[in-house]
Length: 227
Image 1 (cartoon, rainbow, N blue to C red):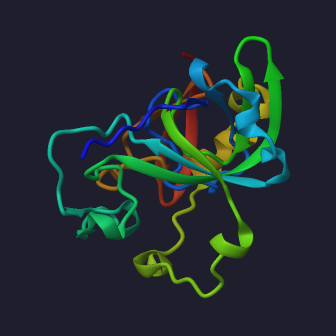
Image 2: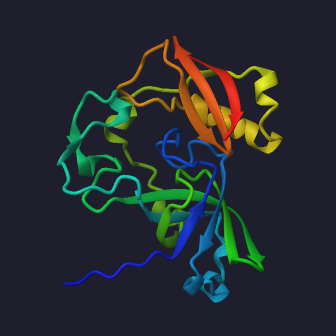
């Protein structure tokens, strides 16, 4: 049986690379992104009524994680990258079909002359240019399960770092991007297998290269440059 799936839209976000993207949607509510539909799907009727919903489900592709073959186990960052779990018990990007699922907040619906109707969303964990396969409304009475449990994530602890961002460096960023940048950094962008306090890491965000180091759960920004 042939499976036909089409890219209906692409995400426009502040992440030029996958490094530093929050590991789950909604973790950084300050993030702002825009969903732009492909030309053949720029029909305003397809979005009729969507403005009445506060949140949306986005089905998309881990386009930077496409590879030949797959592994039945992966190493979740929440477990320090040292413990293997079944791929279907995680949200790892390295899966048989490389599909991602994110819940985002709908901030606005805009009709533009260049791209037709676009959706402005908050809290997305998608890289710029990520292909989107489908969009569905989040329905509280069906999607919110009050008795849900989180498996190994319930006991993984809080990974938030304290961020020290010198004011003179923070001022280089546009004011509208500053809080989002701080929140992204607080979620520890480093790979789980790299924890060297002397190492300088680089994160590309909103057109800027943020250079930082981490020691004793404190992340210090040491340099900010235009990309």
